[in-house]
Amino acid sequence: MRANPHLPDGKQFAFTIFDDPDLTSSRKIRDLYAFLWDCGFKTTKSVWTVPGNDAPEKHWGGETCGDKEYRRWLLCLQEAGFEIAYHNATYHSSTRAQTAAALEAFRCIFGSYPLSMANHFACKEGIYWGESRFEGVNRALYNLVTKRKRADYFEGHIQGSKYFWGDLCQQKIKYVRNFVFSDVNTLRACPIMPYHDPRKPYVNYWFAAANGDDVIAFKRCIQESNQDRLEREGGICILYTHFAKGFSEKGAIDSQFKALMKRLAAKNGWFVPVATLLDHLLKLNGHREITNFERANLTQKWFLDRARRELVNKGTIAQLWHLGNDAGEGLQHAQVSCWGKKGDERISGTRERMDHSEQGGRIIQESTVYRHFISESMPTRALDDIKEHS
Ligand SMILES: [Zn+2]
Image (tube, rainbow, N blue to C red):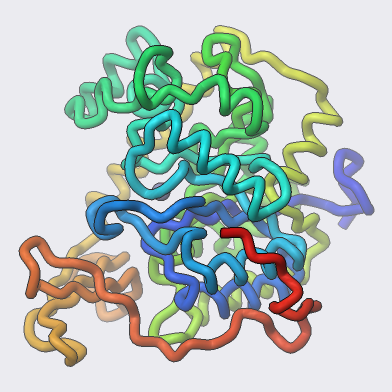
């Protein structure tokens, strides 16, 4: 394959991942990150910087940097070349003062402010999020489709709100994720990224991503034909995901996911973190401001993509409920989200154990055996050498 003149080191295409911490415990994903490292992928993992003061389950929360062991593991990850990014202060809403403190804590732990971030859907300080991503008729359309569930919810960009932190975002964070598309070639879906939108001045640059929300969507996006097309087109894929959503079962990483990633790793790709990739594009293309025409075009493309995704999902996703004491230890209920028509024999999907002993249920930590993240082949430094930041 010929080299892509727009990529360094004679690489043909670029591929990276932006993994959010929703539902994450480090036990769930340590082996997965060791696998990525073994394959040669250096990707981006976003974090919640400070502990929450409410039950994580209520907000699709998970582990935060308040946990000492998790923090140590993240520092190892950073040391190994992965990017640590930001997913708001914690898994629930935070005031301006709390966000300011969380950003300082991030700098204290990881040595600098985050380069990239994605809004967590439960946080009111989400910046230009929900209906605020859109204007005019597109905003009306978004509210119609979402039944105004998130109308007037996000206030991170609204001066005077107690959740306002737009100026801090502008001063300290370079890239914020916006639209997610089905296309594996994110650059084809959004050729102008990273771009500045003068109508959203508190965000320096926006980037787009490909949809890999859970293991099913992830595998669909990097299926063999898509890998080959990404390579053929000399494209760039920023795959947005949640590695806590079905990638590992009982300590074993999904075998199909592994096979696809190994296939991808064998290609002549540039596998660097999101911010490294975006820095490269920014250097190549210079500062770009999105025009009204480009904004309208991108928004329309996103709406069409979402509509198509919804139609596909409606026909093929089945929810199965397994009743009975499924896994012992007080577990009364397990939910399995499946990809495939109801009744299909082949079932794979995200499995979350639910404990209904409390009203509303709560997600139970998987009882996998604790295994250290660092694989034998990974360069390490003694954990004791890592400075503690409390
Ligand atoms: Zn999230």
